[in-house]
Length: 83
Image (cartoon, rainbow, N blue to C red; front, side, top):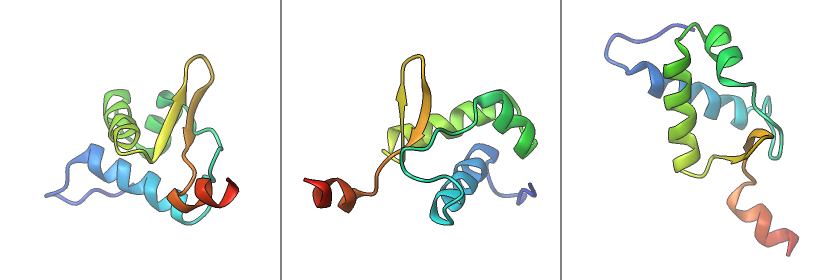
């Protein structure tokens, strides 16, 4: 992954995960790779991967299940459509 000089790495990682979600690489309900694998895959430290995942958890893009992992959230309209 290439980083811009003026871009924070954790933000670039979060943007890359968002891009993968938008392109369907990671689909709603699908588990994401763990921090160690994401870090190696994207060429960042585990701490950077963790910070990106925490930002995506905070904004609702992802959710976590204790003991299971981190998953892609449903799009906002999808939950209402299923009800």
